Length: 162
Image (cartoon, rainbow, N blue to C red; front, top):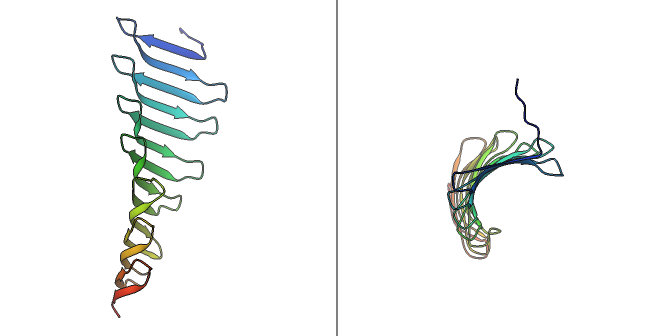
């Protein structure tokens, strides 16, 4: 059996451009990086020392536009970012299997819309730029459907059923 041992392996194309890098960092993170024909890294797959895996797809400028990962607490997520590397959509499934989708504003700290579900019910929620709930369509744990509209201060303007 043939065997190669190294902490890093670099594979180049016929023009000498680095296209694949495999390695283990000093902190124990294993990674594989794939580059395009001009040397821009376009995909990075890593596994942290503790077993946390992730996959990042990068655009030509190096922004991680798609990030898929399983966090140490069991949360599985997909993060879709804009060309400024700002997360804009997060799709997540918690350890208990509860799914959620978040649409973020220009600041990744502002949630504009959310869709989520758990054993207590779930629904669709729309928020203003300040993070205030403006619209909620949801189902309670007993199966009752609700529709609520809120003003900018969070006061209920309309709620059904009454």
